[in-house]
Length: 343
Ligand code: 13P
Ligand code: SF4
Image (cartoon, rainbow, N blue to C red; front, top):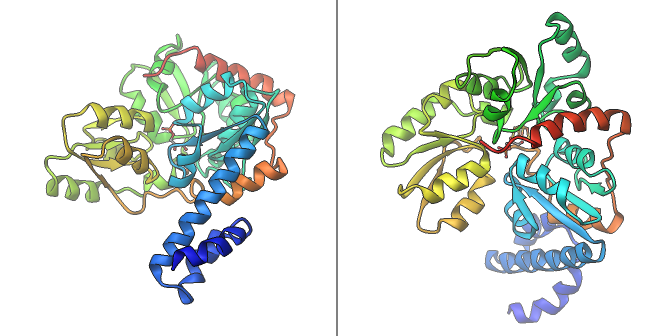
């Protein structure tokens, strides 16, 4: 039956949204057929994206939390640090950044000569929005001489007001590299309090947090651990400190791939955004991954679809470009970070 439908739908699927197939088609076609048609749509979209990437001399970077199908088509997937490094060194003319706004800004800061496309301009980061330049300046004025370490999950303008940046993959080393005994750490209070335990320095923590990771509650983790005693609990340092306390291993998203691959355990409880599961399962087909909570979904990271990527490449927009007066000081803070190796 599908062979009859394929030629007709092949012509259509370039133009129709996948939502149509998922939500309207079930009323006219059986479920199995909807699946076939949806897959055909995805394959056709992927082929078009690949062709345009080549034509535009573009590279597609995707964060580890992106939708499965977006990660699948990416040239490079990675954590915030890996993607920044890649943006800085790529010789592509265009960077299609599948992530959230601050990540595309970092790419624009590090590679100003390249066109940086963010397929969904509305993909922001609520934690990054929890710190403004004005509020940071006010804190700095109250603590004269105290350097600012800023998590990359922040706007370019906030980075420009900072001494050095860090990601979850290098935060401990960044803080240890500083000679001062006091630091302002913004905006993630959870990451800040996690790394504070590796140094004697005094931390002035900004009261920001990731709403997605904060949703994971310690009671839920305790229950899961009791029910699955053979499964190590691996979590991201953006989780609440009460959750981090329960972890067998705390690391960035890329750190989780390494840990789960090398570990002799066969099952893992995962405390970070659900998008990480796609590659974990693909790289470890013999292992089982239990997402610690169904609430671990970042709505912003889930916005970008294959249709959005194709449209961005066709129209060469939306472009993210950081103005020079912000870019230069922000780059100083990012460059200082990039000079330090991963944890
Ligand atoms: P990493 O991939 O750098 O661990 O970042 C986590 C995150 O929340 C990005 O928004
Ligand atoms: Fe921001 Fe959290 Fe989403 Fe990362 S997972 S983009 S920190 S809200």
